[in-house]
Image 1 (cartoon, rainbow, N blue to C red):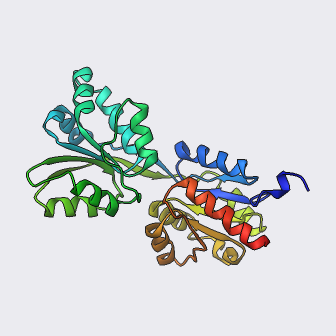
Image 2 (tube, rainbow, N blue to C red; image 1 turned 135 degrees about the vertical axis):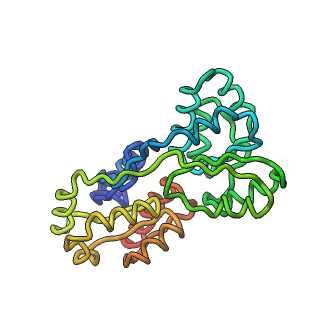
Amino acid sequence: MSAELDLALYGKRIVVTRAERQAQEMGEMIRQKGGIPFFFSVIEPRLTEDLEPIRGAIAQLDQYDWILFTSVNAVHFFVDQVKNAIHPEQKLKWLSEKKLAAIGPKTEKALHAYGLTADAVPTVFHQEALIETCQEQLSPGMRVLYPRAQMARRKLTAELREQGITVDDIVLYTSVVVDQQKEELLHLLQSGEIDVITFTSSSTVKHFVDLFEMTDWRRYLHTLTIASIGPITTQTAQESGLEVQIEAKEFTSDSLIEEIERYYQGKTR
């Protein structure tokens, strides 16, 4: 038997629903394990149209004690806005002096790409864990900047404010629904050529379900395996009527692919 046939994901067509910027890396991991990625980015991040709040925050960046980042996209969009600000060198210097929190290793890596260091990274990659990590270093009276996605959960903001911390909660970017390749994916679903659909956030679940609402795609769910990046995404999927068979342990795309591989390894034993 060839080395390729030893791969648990060999020949499995796996739908990647995350935004294109992160999809390619996930697709490469699938290929390395013998799988076939089908890129179907149901959402793409777009900079918010109302830039006044974030520009105002950047203008007074020196007044913040901490900046919290809960996504890779938030890092990229935020640094771009800092670079486009008046006196960007000064603002970048202020940014480098701030205490920065990253929700997980991918977000931390995005900060490193700009020469920035994350001072707090939870061991479990969701807002609740980030709150616990930050609580050790935050105290009442501090001021925190939280540039976020429009659809981000508000738990972090609410809990920090309850502790007497001032949080400037600012929408930095939004998600736009993309329906490219919808007909092709529907055809593959109908012909039984899709093995796994991956969901990497609650928003990917919601937009995927909405996008296919007027089709018969649910008729083919029994032929599919649904894989989720973590419990919050799983809950959203279940509320949408989807049965999740695979859930990542560490809330990262790496862990998600590992769990999919483990799932199929168990099936071949």
